Length: 70
Image (cartoon, rainbow, N blue to C red; front, top):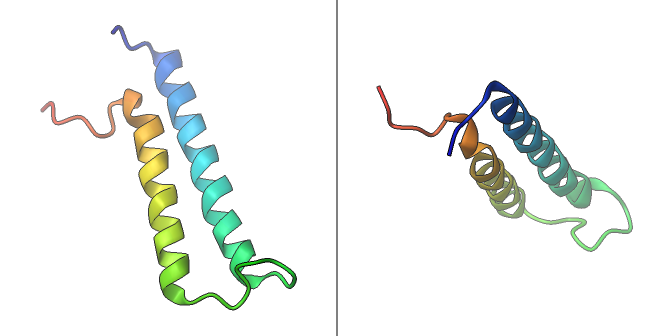
């Protein structure tokens, strides 16, 4: 697959957007009154952020950030 500069920018944009959407969603779920996650533990927040980071890296892997090339 040929990776262009536009592909790199779009994959980074999508990865960052997904990280913010999922990560901040976890934080809001733990803090806002009336949500099912209210009063959750720090472990729940850490696992949620970890899943957000994993998902963002998976989506943005096209950019070459996870490449092992020298």
